[in-house]
Image (tube, rainbow, N blue to C red; front, side):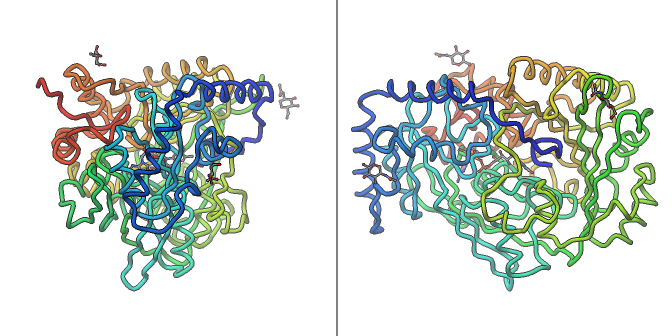
Length: 547
Ligand SMILES: Cc1cc2nc3c(=O)[nH]c(=O)nc-3n(C[C@H](O)[C@H](O)[C@H](O)COP(=O)(O)OP(=O)(O)OC[C@H]3O[C@@H](n4cnc5c(N)ncnc54)[C@H](O)[C@@H]3O)c2cc1C
Ligand SMILES: *[C@@H]1O[C@H](CO)[C@@H](O)[C@H](O)[C@H]1NC(C)=O
Ligand SMILES: *[C@@H]1O[C@H](CO)[C@@H](O)[C@H](O)[C@H]1NC(C)=O
Ligand SMILES: *[C@@H]1O[C@H](CO)[C@@H](O)[C@H](O)[C@H]1NC(C)=O
């Protein structure tokens, strides 16, 4: 289950949309300011002066005019959310793909010198497109990490160094190449970039056993606002704390993470059980899941997706339970019979496989897809256009609330409108709220991910989503109503300028993502990036000078 409730999306993008979209796209570039060419030249010249590796920079530099035939392809290569590809959002004046770490340092130095804003992209999965479009900067350069994706796995040391441009799938594959007893607790979708993912915490099916990806980081290499390359010792513990969950692109550019590997058994078990609205008429199963999913053994992770399915008289709501167990079928059946009999899991529903095979299963590829798909940057879905939101639940939602959710599901026509509920507890509750900036810990039963497809009639679907979110208010965390920073949601607010009013607003959305950790993030921001070099619509703000 990546982004479509486990359903394979195969509708092709309507041709008429596509044509008008290309037309809009090119008209955008015909109005790109004339000065951008010389700005690019100055940027390249400056890069040449500031790098010490012998590499022809123009080979890795893409301009919409000079490289017109490939620019669009490069820009859109890793973009996940088509919703952000509208004409109204400014796109980069050029794209630079550093091939050496010193290129990243030079980019920061030159962007400071020439006053050019930079956006950094690793996997391109940002929900609001903050890595490649901007709502606050009209002119910026895109630093794309797709050529910095080296992975060095050291089984003896139980660790790996991973460059920011690698995907989660590549990381999984490279670990499994060396050992079938090692893994890493990270996300469901194989195409997500390591660079952005870990900066926001990073959850996945091993989280109840090992915590977040960010809980398992040992060291990092980062380029700061002055272009200096720092490791953990050089950056100090404050900055090292901030980058493990404080959100991407606020404190510096991550070059690489050193991660701690996690032990996995040779055999894991996965399962999928579906219940329609009629099959769980009194919400017995879903109510029980809410009460026990966070309390089950840490080796067991059962997430739930809820989505409309079928048409007309056959329309219903499907609740899908997808489980991953670190162990064999037999043990799993014992655990389920004791703790969650209501689901009615049978041995027939269960499939045993290796950890690496389970990552392919979790990413929603069809059964028996070769694991090589993990290193091919392939997604099981066509590119989607979507809007998402998140919530955290602290008390089971009563039947009256569940009825309201299912009623709203029945009103939606799109299969790609769904909720995904992710159980917490286990290791997630053992870290304190301030261990890293990610604060959603003890007392959280589960997280809700809301998604709707915005390909057709976007405002109708977005309104549906916002209405559901509003309906959920009494059933989810409050004061603050918490949100997951890796599920960027600009409905919560966005930076506009450096005023006191902006800062006050940022405190509101910032507290949703980070609770009390927001204050410490602001202090660290002031120390490491007082001039706000690393800024975007939801970057940690600097305090206005008037305060
Ligand atoms: C299909 C899909 C599946 C997902 N599944 C999961 C999941 O299972 N678990 C989970 O926790 N999240 C998941 N997410 C959310 C994902 O973790 C975030 O979108 C994450 O920020 C993506 O990282 P990225 O490098 O791919 O994205 P990008 O768009 O490249 O970057 C995201 C943000 O980080 C910044 N950034 C990127 N690279 C760097 C860098 N090197 N240094 C500093 N800042 C940087 C960007 O500027 C941007 O602000 C999913 C998202 C999608 C679209
Ligand atoms: C972009 O175009 C310029 C000028 O034609 C060329 O020198 C450069 O190699 C091109 N860049 C890439 C990455 O192809
Ligand atoms: C509902 O399902 C039945 C049985 O599968 C089928 O014959 C019928 O055409 C379906 N109705 C609609 C509106 O899809
Ligand atoms: C700055 O942003 C704030 C908050 O969004 C807004 O209220 C204010 O009018 C803006 N001020 C200026 C000078 O643009």
